[in-house]
Amino acid sequence: MVPVILVIEDKKSMAEMLAETLRAEGFEAVTAPSGEDGVKAALGGGVDLVLTDLKLPGMNGLEVLRTLKAKRPLLPVIMMTAFGTIDTAVEAVKAGAFDFLTKPFDISHMLVLVKRAVEAGQMEAENILLREEFAEVLGFPKIIGRSRPLLDVVEMVRKAAPTKATILLTGESGTGKELFARAIHHLSPRARGPFVAINCAAIPKDLMESEFFGHEKGAFTGAEARRLGKFELADKGTVFLDEVGEMELNLQAKLLRVLQGESIERVGGSDPITVDVRVVAASNRDLEKAVAGGGFREDLFYRLNVFPVRIPPLRDRAEDVPRLARHFAAMYCTEIKKPPLAISDASLDVLSGLPWKGNVRELKNCMERAVILADGEIRPEHLGVCPPPAAPDESGGFEGPLHAVAERASRTAETKAIRAALSACGGNKTKAAEILEVSYKTLLTKVKDYDIV
Ligand SMILES: Nc1ncnc2c1ncn2[C@@H]1O[C@H](COP(=O)(O)OP(=O)(O)OP(=O)(O)O)[C@@H](O)[C@H]1O
Ligand SMILES: [Mg+2]
Image (spheres, rainbow, N blue to C red):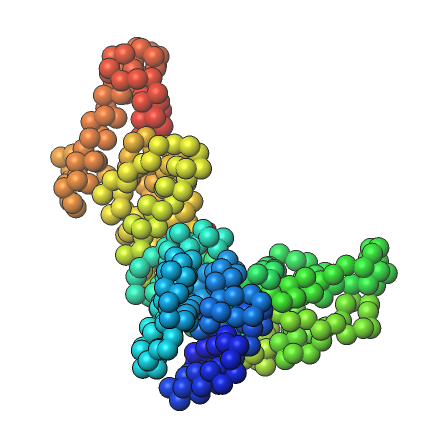
């Protein structure tokens, strides 16, 4: 995609000269004669960089900058100032301008700055998917992971997000399809519009059409009032069609028409309604197979598959596991107001080696459980993911990393000691804790963790 640069400049000849120079360098350039017009154009979407004059009639460059930074913090802005207004230029940079140019400026210097700003803007959009501070500012969950397969997905999403192209997210259950769908919405010019999710697998088939497109009063038994459909509610925003493979064939035909830009009709209605929605669809079923089997329209498949993004299963990016595990552990500790927990190396080894059929969701649930059970440190026995490995004894159990052998040995020894103490005092845990010189709480935790009955 060719980067689009918006030049906000009230002097027509200057604006045209800048636009021509930028075009000659392979950029697309548009101009706006006032701050108000410029802000409107920039917020309308499709602009990658703003070059604004400081002195403008009405809204000045600094106000343009502040308005844009509040609404589209990622859009780079370069300020053009007249000689002698260096203080304002500094103020502009403090307010978030990428840089400033003092008039009269050298054209080649301007081009260098523009190129740098465009690149920085693109990188920023990519980083935002991965960086917490921005994720919080923009209100979407952080995407964790640095493995190559995940970064490839991030890169694709970054490129496709600002367009109106339909995106089809595929991947096993729990890989993060909904998370990416939200990220796409947030990185698009529609970010301030609604994000409406429809789970096609959760809606009874006979209600699906009304759910999508709404109905008029009396359209069918039980339709007591007019109801707006999800597509209407998502106007100027994004519709996320989850489990799109579950749609019925007749509704598939209607969806196809929406995707082709045709208007929609409420059930029982006759007035066509035009909506402006971007569709992001997801499926964990193989849609190509569904097409071959006749359960999914081929034309709809191609229409949805304009920009396919496959999210790899967690087992194919095991290097992301420790990072995800730490993130979820910290998240649940905060949630249940528990002091931060370390994760033992043995636990990380166990976690990294699991097949994770339920992908990130399964890991997330596993960490939630571990956070509840653990004190101080998350150890393998808190994970509850697989039967604990055999304890070392004469018959074996000494294989594997040393720390894992030690963990198992200490677990066996402690289990034996606790059993002995409990039986010595007839199962009275208070007394057993005294004998073992641990707190009652520690004893209870261990009894539970080690499954001592
Ligand atoms: N890379 C990631 N970083 C942080 N959290 C993640 C990541 N991937 C997934 N998650 C979290 O894992 C959970 C499952 O993700 P999500 O619901 O997006 O999966 P899905 O692919 O839509 O699954 P399903 O097909 O079952 O609907 C969510 O809580 C999500 O926030
Ligand atoms: Mg989902």
